[in-house]
Length: 179
Image 1 (cartoon, rainbow, N blue to C red):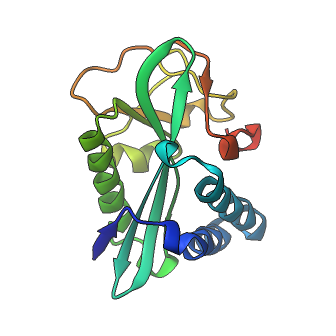
Image 2 (cartoon, helix red, strand yellow):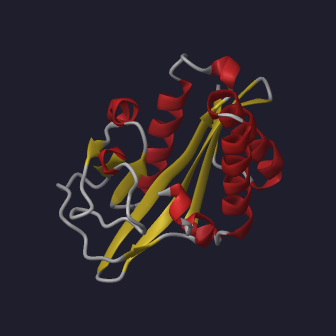
């Protein structure tokens, strides 16, 4: 398994992975939505505001994760949100997603990022160090449909302290449908 942070030559393959993975698990409408989100994130987000990590096995794309920047009007902390996350259906249940997320978080730590947040299944994301947080701790860009899925992780060995909002996400995520 080879991890990579280079994505620009593989945008279509990565977007197709998100489409296929979410179609298989959530249906064709969700697959199209998340595939297009991934494509837009990679195509429209300034390089300083996005990190894409992939895992390859024998030149086959096995998984991809995307982190994009969250900014806060009243706080200068460096924060990235993890999402979306996809592991090829045939490679699921092999801990590839967990290893890929751990690799991506380590990359963010090395850059000096303060905090990673995500919005998803707490039982999965707890396995890679995330804890449930509230919107009082870290204001989300939009009202959360499932506040129990708002999770965070300090990347700088200091306890999470509430951030001063409001927050702003990158343009591709700037839609309440994702929150």
